[in-house]
Length: 118
Image (cartoon, rainbow, N blue to C red; front, side, top):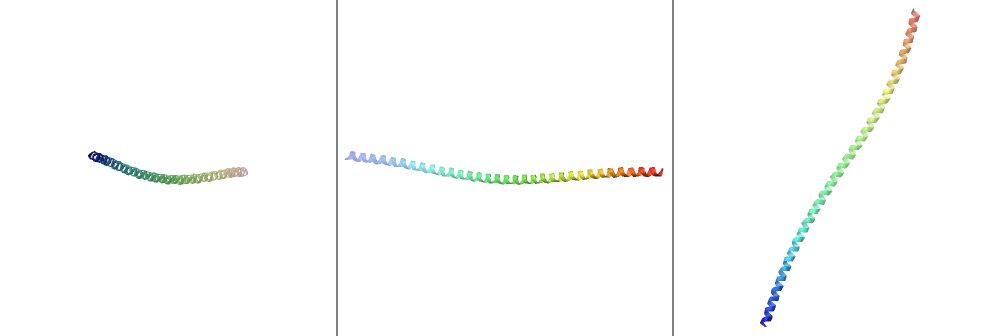
């Protein structure tokens, strides 16, 4: 009977050891879970930061697009101004040509007048 009691006692001690091992395992698993939660939170933060960066980049792109559109408009305006200046130069050339003909006519008239006077 004493042997049986000793065996039972040993069995109980073994079970107690097993329970302690299981407790340790559970604690380790809890720690692992906490670590995983922390990692997930860090990843969420990283994702949020990346989203913010993407939004900032989108905003920058929009500003750059607007700037390009403004520059295109400015170039078109400058082209129009150049065309207007070309037209003005042509008009001035025509006026100079007309003035040249007028001067030639006046020269001819003066020569005629001089011929009459002499």
